[in-house]
Amino acid sequence: MTEHSTEQRHAGRKPQWWRAGWFVPAVLVALAVILIAENTASVRIRLFIPVVTMPLWTALLIVWVIGVLTGLFVARRRR
Image (cartoon, rainbow, N blue to C red; front, side):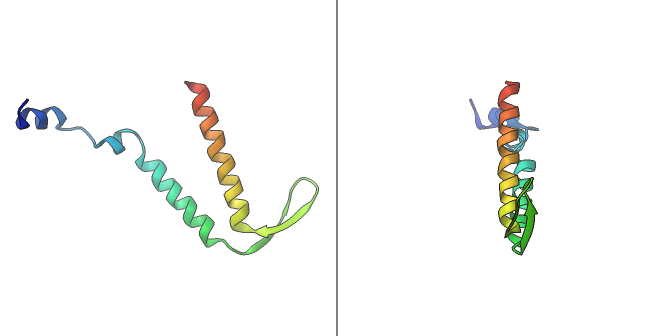
């Protein structure tokens, strides 16, 4: 194959990372990390019955991890 025919075959295609749908999730993860890192104050959180005091970033991180695990579970069940 010549270099010219390879360029024609790939012309108009998006890069692999863009086609795979990694750009938008990567931006969302970056925004989530920034949100978690910026919120460091201690807050009171009610967990059904007990009230706990913890840094807000910890609570946000816990909810984020639960969301990621739920998303992975749903994506796996679709296959």
